[in-house]
Image (tube, rainbow, N blue to C red):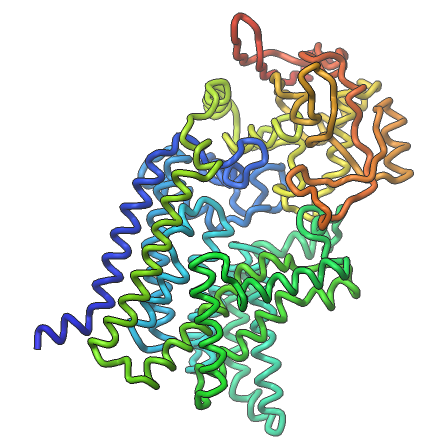
Length: 610
């Protein structure tokens, strides 16, 4: 009898082993890191660290972590939880991000297991689902996108299924809670969830079209509770975009750092690539297994009898497909898309796994694999293969990934010193002026606010980033001192930072010191008004047709007609801004190398010079 109990609980014991082993392996990997495995200029993990510093230093989680008064770009749920974790254990923010990832692995393993157990009522199927959905190689989780993928996504599916199946108010309330939190977790996941919920509602209305009044009477209370719970949470983010900015977007956030889904050839290429990824992926062991399982699930779906689970899978998958490929409708009509590559990453991915597990469940019942010895052989073997594959993937990342190797080295001493000074001598809402990449670095290491930043990471479609770039150019390079002072006051700028990377963060320089390419300079759209504005204040510019984001430059990404602020504006290498600013600058920190200052932080003092 005891033997039977142990065998029946074997999937749970294996899950415990998987969690413990995965946590230990992850600790082994992250303990080698002395900095984030990401570029300090433009790296997503560093921007995420800036969000956490912003919250830890007293910044409002519901406001931008990098620009004063804006809305958050990297949505704050992950950053808030990680910040509180760091505070609880008195950890440095970077170390806290690493250790919090281990906690997330444990929590996610439990959530995924519970989700699949509820769906399939089988611990072996749930165990295989954990190995597929929450592989060790999905870690470390160091940003909000992956957090949403591994934590919020299964919670959304779980509450959606329970609400659909049980029709109880409590599950609609929980669905409203998770749906609301999605808008504070990841915007693409939130939009996808919205479209999927809409798919369920449309399906059920159509299904009950002959007795629609009775259907509405039965369900209006449930959806009312859903709305009452969700709406206040949604407004934490959406109040400003709707009621302050009126959804006006001063620049094209959607098309500058992803494929140009406004082009028909790109639309078709993405469609074909996606079909290959989920139905004909034989390029890796993991892809091969998921492909086979997906086809098995499709076969099982066709052959199996109707059930609530089968109906749920049908509607969920239809919603996921619609959410991912909605660009065929939204691009021609509204000139927007919902970031299809991310939508696929969230919803087609989990749809494929659920379909695959449905196929395994069908196979188990049809061929009597619920006999203990057969279970152990078939599912134990499949788990071992998946376990070995995900373990190898994590170790390979730690040992061979380019950015993982970077993370094994500490930050430059210069930036550690700068970080210490800023954290101990400035306020979280103090605004810093520099190049976009140097500003990115300052915000990442301290959570302090900046005048300009990378447009993509700023991720705020309602902020006028082109105007900010122009105003920065006028402050640094313009010919009207009074206008400069006006703009400094307008944007509440308190510090100016320079280091020897100033020019190289804007333009590529060859070994002879010649500028040979564009990295991430100040820029704006090429319009008559913008030309006149820059001309008025003596700022030189170069009109070009080029990409906006420095990390996304290929044939599939859209180019724009832009005005690049010219390197001709530099006063000199160590003093790029015009000298009329100097009498307002007070040096408060510097870093020297071989007797030369290679980095200087100035406080802007306007009060004594009026």
